[in-house]
Length: 459
Image (cartoon, rainbow, N blue to C red; front, side, top):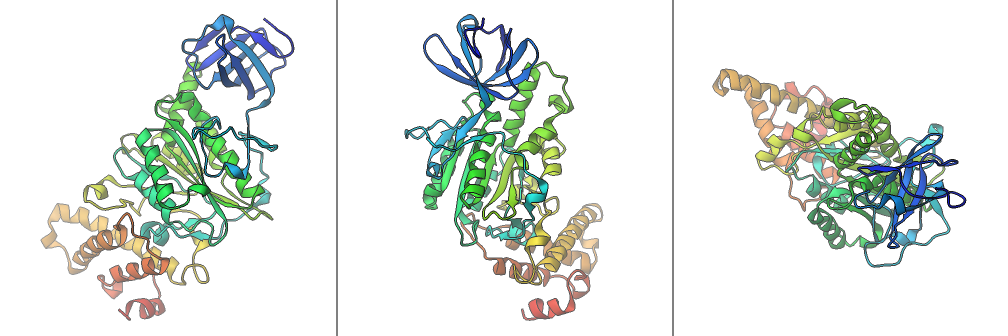
């Protein structure tokens, strides 16, 4: 029933988080909806689908327990927007940008659509400044670049949260310039959210952090909006205020599950493992909001984290994430079982922007060749280990046994480090050369003679 301009009473039917409203007109896709209940409570939603006589509304708190006939709906005539202001730094909000820290609701003259603004690809500036994380496997072999999107692929029980917190504590995000941290928790447990809050407090950066929390017992449908809300504020801080912003999002697997829930409720034809066919483009609409813009001082660097179901890297969410983003950091369960922290396996890990941010004048002139040599040597270690499992270690050649020694040294002295150990880039590269000293000189085919003379023979 129409109650005046763009106001209606009653929902035709509900299914899961979706409300179906009939007999409406002049309503747009992605439009914000406010739903007032008889007891005065206000629910938020947005239009997911629209036809000549029907609108499908995504209700962020879910539709359970609603008296469908008495709900009053008001269509706002604009997309879902949030106020943005640099005074939001140091605050904690939910996925709808409502305060959770007891403070006042944010007020600002500047309102931004959580869907983001289309960005001309020509306006993008190529990322070229490296971020030192203090973690050798990342800095030395999968260097993080300012403006990059570099996800962390993990599994249940692996220390991805500890790794992310270490990166947050140690990363030189701004390179001496102003920086900010935006943390988006997507369906995480209370203890995980508390751990990150403690990390921010212990690191003395609380006033530089904005947290958007959607916890495990919060409405799952809110998880779809949480990363977009966080990135909307990050874009304001980076491109309006000139800050270098690191956005940490965990867990993107929970985001994908919420997206699948909505698609199922809409009755859409499922694709791989029940996920909607538009999963790729939907994830891209989040990940592509990282980067730098020409003539803008700030940048957005993304560290999305996701737990691979059954450690399956071919699962749709990690699989598509790997296509969209500029590499991945992969945590390995076998390394974790050996007691190695952080259990980053360099072989499936990758940083596609690494070459642009390393080398002479940036890190060190030997960085590229050293990284290539470490990759090649560790790859050979895995082949020798497979061979030893077949013929026995005593039947291996001297060269093969030297690779096994290198592998043990590499894992214990290069990959492994204490959770509070912050290595400089110089120390990371020197540790790499020290590990290569175990191998015969004839096996060092990726580094030059001049580099061997300068960095290896002096040891």
